[in-house]
Length: 241
Image (cartoon, rainbow, N blue to C red; front, top):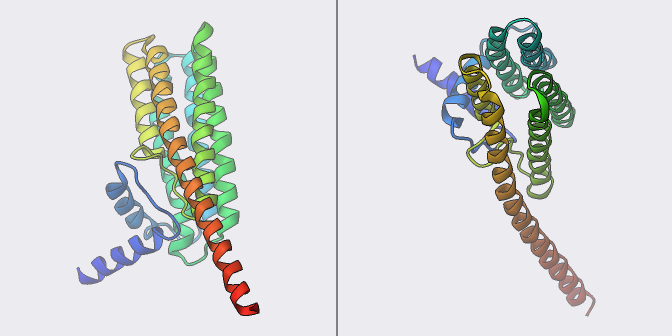
C-alpha cells in the first residue's frame, strides 16, 4: 500500500514537469494520467500514443461523415473517438517525462501540429454533416480553437510556463462539451447547429478574456526586461566609474 502511494506521488510529480494545469477537471485528470502512465507497456512509445490520439480525432471526423451519408447514430462513434483521443493526447508527453526520456521541443512541436491537423479534420467533418450556412460554425470552431492554441504558445514564450488550458477550460472540457453536443444531435436532430454556434460564442468570449490576460502578462514582462536592462547599465556605469 505504501509502495503504491509512493509510486503515485512520484508519477504525479513527474507528469507535472514543465506544465501548469488550470482546467476544472485537473485534479481528477492528473491522478488518472499518473495512474495510467505506470500501466503503459514498455513497447508503446510516446510517438505511438500520439498516433493513437490522432486516430481518435479521425474517428470523430469520420463519425460526422458516416452520420451524414449512412445513419444518424454513427455520430455516437465520436464519443469513442474523443475517449481514444484523450488517452493518446494526454499520455504521450507525460509518458516521456515519467520514463525520464523527454524530448521537450520535439514533443511540443509534434503535439501542436497533430492537434491542429485533428482539429481541422473535425471541423471539416462537421461542415460535411450540417446543411447550408451552418457549415460556417465548423469553420469558426477551427478558427477559435486555433486562436486558443496560439494564445497558449504565446503564453509559453512570454511567461516560460506551458499551459494547454484557457482558465478552467482545457482540451478535456472541450471534448466533453463536443461529445454532449453530438449526443444531443443524435436524439434531437438539428440541435447541433444551435449548440455548436453557442459553443463557438463561448470559445470567443474565453479567447477574448485569455487574450487580455496575455497582453497584461506581456506588458509585465516588458517592464521587467526594461528594469533588468537599466539595472545592468547602472551596474556597468558604476564599475567603469
